[in-house]
Image 1 (cartoon, rainbow, N blue to C red):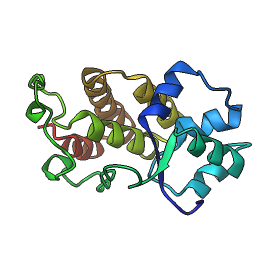
Image 2 (image 1 turned 90 degrees about the horizontal axis):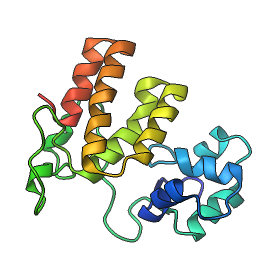
Image 3 (image 1 turned 30 degrees about the horizontal axis):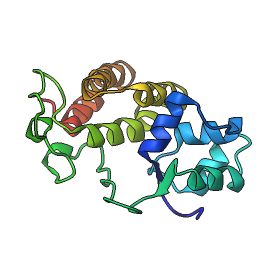
Image 4 (image 1 turned 90 degrees about the vertical axis):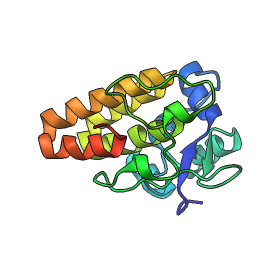
Length: 177
């Protein structure tokens, strides 16, 4: 189980907001940061005090699931320079039934693809501390519009931290023109 990629389930994202289950601090911290960008064993080494028992608790409560388990497979994250908007995992938000067309300058990704990109790339693009704080903002986002706003903020933050070339790569990955 430690060499598998895991991701949060809808129940896991809801638990982050509700804090309804009696999770240990280490298990809750693990839930906050865990995504499918690294194997579970790496996340355990990164989160102080987290153990295999904490990982198993999250799995048994349905808060995390191995990647590709129990439903649709999660999209594989391309490198930041690759255009995500052209892959099958990135459906334009306007194509969803009953969805409003995205506002001018908004990312063209659907909610799931946008969430996955933002939560998976934040620490890579912003560093561990700012990336962790940004990932918490992503977890609190409760709508596509909120995620789109965070995507635009990510572009600005990357531009300030790493320059225009890095920001252009993020814009391209988000489907921004």
